[in-house]
Image (cartoon, rainbow, N blue to C red):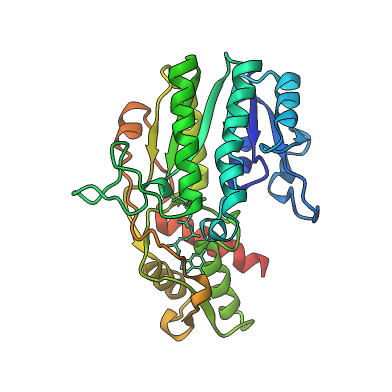
Length: 321
Ligand code: GDD
C-alpha cells in the first residue's frame, strides 16, 4: 500500500485529493494546523474520518514536519498548505512570505533529510505570472513571472526552491502551476463561491445586494475535483518537472455574475454593488493557461465545464440555505 502525506489536507484540494488517493488504494496521512475555532475545521474531510490519519502540525514549525515525516515515511508528499487568499496576503505579507515561501523550504529540508526517495508535489499557482501574457493570450511554463501580490511573490520563491532542490539534490520534486479551481467546498471569500452564495441568498429573499471588488478581471476557472487528479498524474510522472493545469478558457468576474444570476432567473445588474474594500492594491487582470502538455503527455483532461461546475455550486447552496 503506497503512503501519501498531504499538508493542508482539510482544505478544498486536500479533501478531494484524499478521496481520490483513498479510492486508488493509498494509505493517506495529513497535517492540520491548529486554530482557535475548532468547529468546522475538518468538515471537508469528515466523510473520510476512519480512512485517513491526521496530525497537528505547521509548515512553519520544522520540528512538527520532521516528526510526522519520520513517523509516516511517505512515498508521496503533496504540499497544499498555504495562506491561500491573495487579497488577505496584502494585509499579512510577512506571514504569507513565511508560510508560502519559507514553509516550503522547511518541508523540502525535512524531505531531503528524512525520506529523499519520496516524490514531492508543490502547489504552485498561476498568480505567479502576475500580468505577464504571451502574445497569443496564454500563460505557459516559459511566460515570465512578474507577481502582483505578496502571495504571488511567496509562490515564486517556493517554485524556485522546488526547482533548485530537484536539480541540486536529485529529488523527485515537481511544481503543478494550477490556475483557479473551485467547487462547492471553496471558501466563501473567494469570488466564485461568494457570488453563488450571495445570489442564492438574494433568490431566497435573505438579502438584497452583494458587494464585490473588481468585476473586470478575468480568470481561467476549473474544478478542484479535476485538478487533484492532475496532481496525482504529475507526481507519478517518471521524470520530475513542472506542469500547467488549466481549463484554457477564461471569463471575467462580470461574466461569472451574469451566468450565476441568470441561472437563478435574476439580472445581476439589479443586485451587484462595488465596494473599494474588495479592491486589491495591485490587480492581476487576466489569466488563461495553456495546458496542452499535460493533456498530451499525461492524458489529463477536465470532466467539468465552467457551467457544470457553477451549476453544482448553485445546487449545493440551494440545498444548504
Ligand atoms: N475574493 C474576491 N472577493 N475576489 C473578488 C471580489 C470579491 O468580493 N470581487 C472581485 N474579485 C476578483 C478579484 O479581484 C480577482 O481578480 C478575482 O475576482 C478572483 O479572486 P479570488 O476568487 O479571490 O481568486 P484569486 O484569483 O485571487 O486567487 C485564487 O487563484 C489563485 C490561482 O491563480 C486562489 O485560489 C489562490 O490561492 C490561487 O493560487
